[in-house]
Image (cartoon, rainbow, N blue to C red; front, side):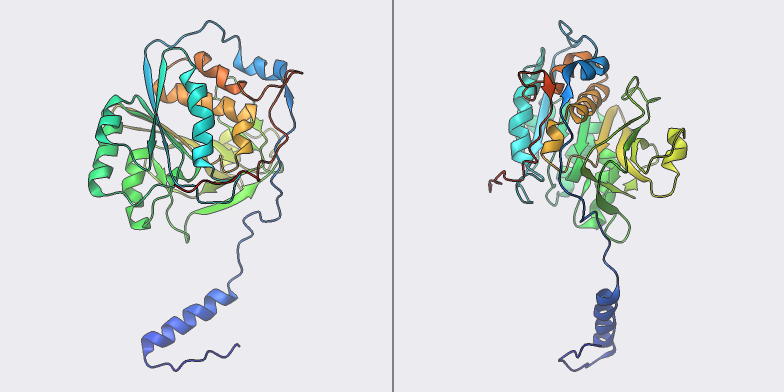
Length: 325
């Protein structure tokens, strides 16, 4: 046992010492530290088009105003590039017919909520006030749509997680309950293709990314994707209950008149340049808005298709420089 150079003066101090020693002896979870950050191989456009269908000349049934919420970047470049991803995706969405896009930073104003049909948020939320939570909950309950991506489900201090879960369905329950880890092709992302958001898509997709699971969830949350070891021939429900399965990869939630879709994936910037991931994002946006997905399919290809009609990236993008805000 290592010598601790202070004198215990009370029972409280003894308790603190025991806690320190226990923490030192407790094994650290792996978190996928040995998994290399590696984008998937490029894919022929024709293969992706089998899943997007013919989307040319399609149009939304109404005008849609999207509010994209970002915040300070908190990792090395290529991870949690909140501002970079906003800069890539807002022009792609703004190019969709009948879509306008507005940007917000840290948290929307009431006026921005009032204009928005869909809030897409990719950031680590600040410690929201009770007034801000009330604004957020009112937006959803009155019919606002939300797409919550990756760390957007985390609220600290954790005792306010229940309020965030009321807005989006799931939230981080604290380090003793919720978990996170990298994952790779040995644990595919299995899709609930019976759900309309993912109907017609493959049973599974493979990514090299990160997810969270064991989140605090409201009663009417439905998991529609799970990260899990391959289980040949098993149903989605069987896979979800299998050993090593990580739920909350994608979920849906309704509150009042609002529709929410969330995912805990999307850690790496290169994941956002993967056509299969973009397909999931496009399908999620359409489901949240209760619209047909075809008009959003252009974002699957735009900016990541080369002269040989191969789609994706081979760059792990870890040299991106985060910009302080």
